[in-house]
Image (cartoon, rainbow, N blue to C red; front, side):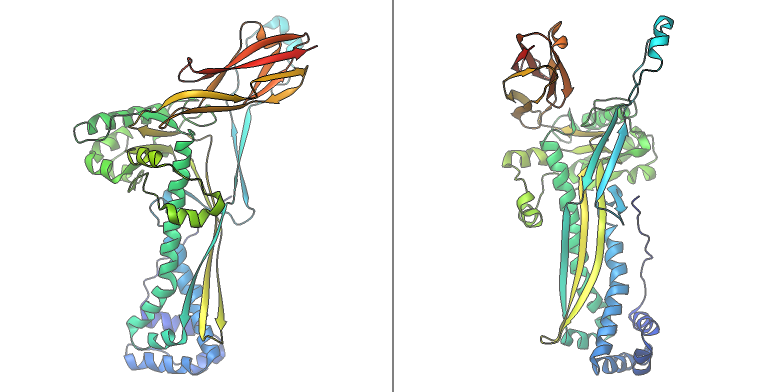
Length: 454
């Protein structure tokens, strides 16, 4: 199980930090380095003792980085803009299995068939999704002897040194984590994995209409439905487990009190379920390309503009599957260059649940234009299975769901197993057609020719 680490906030002064390092240091360090007091000269005496002997320098910086720096960096990690969605640290393993059990089917009561049916198995509809570690990065900073020496010239120098060691690391780490979460969300929207609900384009005049649509969807999430998640399992999301991600423009226009009422919360409670984003389409693509390398999938200019037009997204608290797999600090001293190297490793899992409810409030309604299947015909014998690749194309953000349709009596020859998989079950030679049609526009379809041989 993941766990959220707990960290105390560090409010220690520079003098307290220097003395805390001495207190936990080796006997050799304590004998050579005096206690510091509020006098600036005592700090310089500490610096003179430390700089006179390289092992003392190593011990001071190692403790400063691994104890003080670690608290700062890791604490900051859990205070990023979207930290509410993080699941915590996975201390063991790299893969998370998410399991969902769909609701059971109702059965007809019939005493006449009870003796024959009562031992028949009814296997539950159990779905699973695997979330795999897909992000392994590290951040590095260098501290020279001269920078360490200057740190002991003033009390501010100690805090400046700490800032140099950790600030660039946690700032970069938080920014990259935020970027990855936005990119993950964007790809889910573009690939049709989230429910789309059309609303008017955001203006001051229609803000009330958009808020009303958010209310409606929030109310709909409360009831058991298979409409609002990628896997179309029956799920629901209580009000206290709903989070709304709003753009800064939408947030500035809406009445927080009105929206809080929609969530059946006080304003204070609702603020914890309202998360802001600058824009869903503001993505630092150059940095993302460096972070993801060959795994980066480009986003078209049209989709970027469509993402920027989104005012808000409503999600279940379990929609984001973001885990920390490892965070670790290491260090080494380069005697030839007279500097220390520090590394902060951050390994993560970025994914989204196919079972959790999520709704995109879309201002630019897309449309399905075509369904392409491959192959377009199959010929096989009884009990053979075929995978049909179904590609639903369209413009803008659109619903990619499709239906498999058979005519009356055709089900005795073929069985649809889901996700394009078809099983041939006919016992006689036949040639017929089946249809894959858009879930939102039945007029758009593609025909599959099915040849069965006895």
